[in-house]
Amino acid sequence: AQKITQTQPGMFVQEKEAVTLDCTYDTSDQSYGLFWYKQPSSGEMIFLIYQGSYDEQNATEGRYSLNFQKARKSTNLVISASQLGDSAMYFCAMREGKRSGANSKLTFGKGITLSVRP
Amino acid sequence: ETGVTQSPTHLIKTRGQQVTLRCSSQSGHNTVSWYQQALGQGPQFIFQYYREEENGRGNFPPRFSGLQFPNYSSELNVNALELDDSALYLCASSLDPTGANTEAFFGQGTRLTVV
Image (cartoon, rainbow over the protein chains, first blue to last red):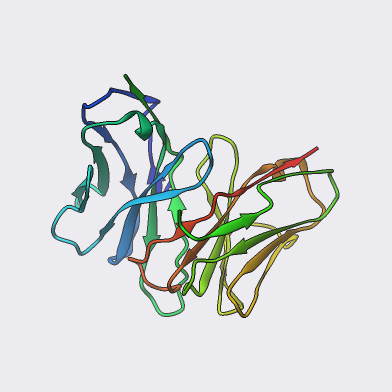
């Protein structure tokens, strides 16, 4: 089974409107971290926002916020007041566990293309 | 800008050749991870280095190997290149290898084309 699932086709949003990008995950670990990254055409992965599995509040970071539903294993990214510069690929990723000796590898989804229209 | 730098930015190699990609981690970060991102896909974990030792490996053959140096910079070596090795190779540095809540900072990547 896929650990991170991003199934939306390319998304379009009008400038200044809000958009939600979906992500579901699968893990048996109790402790894990969920990340969203933005990848513009230049290729660099830019960290946007993080949600810990034990965090009770939804994470927010400027115009980015997460709708974290632990029971449903989903962590959707909400971008408010979209800007033209938000056009990019968006990746959801998970880091599992905090066990001794574990490494901190990230498991990524396939990404979602977001296009912001003027 | 993250402070993680990769070189070169672009590279073209012939099938069967060997290639070395380089990564300088962000200051203070002792953990470096390498990822391969094929076109249209999400990054796939290759391996991680922590304090000069390999600390976990993804599903990649042994011809993918790496090194980490005392200053925590790192190299990714790929021998006997195949056409399917054409991808964007991303390096990420982080503060420690085990914390679930430690974000990784990525470099701009090396785009490798194998012909």
